[in-house]
Every structure is written in structure tokens, then in C-alpha cells.
Length: 99
Image 1: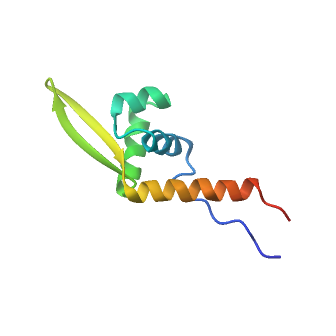
Image 2: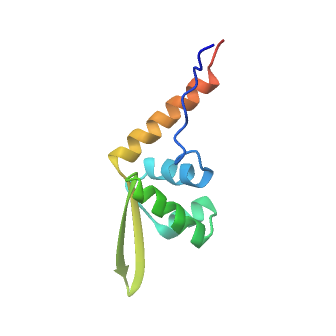
């Protein structure tokens, strides 16, 4: 029997990374604090997951200063957008599978 299920993108199959990408799909960009509050993640975990998404070129991370405080801003890349769309399509295929 042929396996009709594709392997899901392991990078997006993580709940927090999927939440980050889902959030960034809907906004032009978001700062670290906004993502932190929206996902209820811890500072450390969010930093690690943002780094993984950045290393995969799914997001761009810009660091700057605002009123003498560091500010981290993230936005989704075209590669990240395509990966998210494929992931959603793959999940739909799982949900609508007919034998």
C-alpha cells in the first residue's frame, strides 16, 4: 500500500514555531514582546525558537535600539511564507484523507 502522507515540515511541526509563523503571516512585522505575549512563551524558549526559524531563513530578525532599550523585530520571509502554506496544505491532506 502506498503511503499518501507526506512528511510534515519538522521545523513548523513544533507548537511554538508554528504559532510564531502563524502570527507573522498575519502582520507585517512583530517585536519580541508582542510575540512573547501572544504565544505565552518564556523569554529563553522564544529566543531559541526564533533563532531556529531565522537559521532556516523562515524569518528575518532585526535588532535595534529604541529609547536606549534593545528591540528585536521579526518578519516572515518569502521562504517562510511558502513553507507555511505547504504545511497548511499538507495538514489539510491529512484531514481529508480517504482510503
